[in-house]
Length: 314
Image 1 (cartoon, helix red, strand yellow):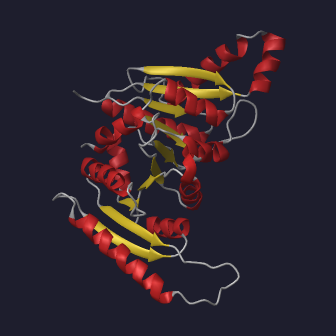
Image 2: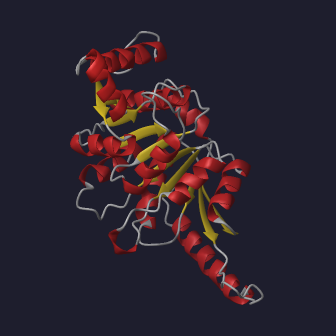
Image 3: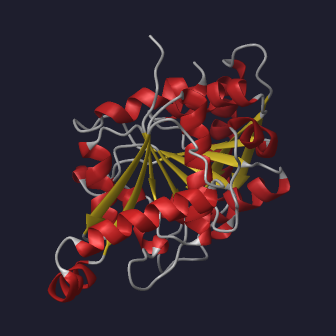
């Protein structure tokens, strides 16, 4: 059975979301999948429009604007055979998450930044909240990336795939997905681990150099083990660095010319919101595609696990 992932692409009619839409369409076209294009109207604007123009005016106008945006983006041609236009009202992040779950979408593609104002979503805080709470993988595109027209052009632009791992129980799945992507895109992998400094508040003079050396030595051994387990034909390198994770990952992406970062989003203790902030900080520090992978332990994460193998070509 051929898996065809369903792609959800939220847009706010900005140039940044136009680039994300091109990525979403290229992925949907490659898999002959459905592309859902979503815009979210502000509740206050919707209420004002309902009073002045009738309750149906804003949804209908938004749908027309979505169609114009789609036509302008793709020169009047349909980017895929199955395109769904969705108009919702509410807070952007909760609506994106609700629509993704209700429609059983397998991938969300959105820009890291957009525009503010009437009927426009502020993607900065929206993207971070989506990353914190999503049960669906999220491909986040840089705001200044115009986007490709085909998956082949994505592959040509990737160059190298950076895979930051924390060597937790989530690492094998993350590496497996990245390995499949590397095979499908014919791109080399860079497995990286950042050892954070141990800090004692109020005692900066305490020396922990021996402990930190031991931590880095263990990390390097585990990275080498992960690299050795790769299937033949995958070009893989390792990097063990020390410092602030987002800063070091942005530096690695820049210096090693990584066009895609595959990161895990881990649940916080006690079942609270996922820590999307590290991923989002990486997004603010680099202009690189980021594929964020939520954990699969959630009971609501059914469709989230599905696209990994298909997207990865496994």
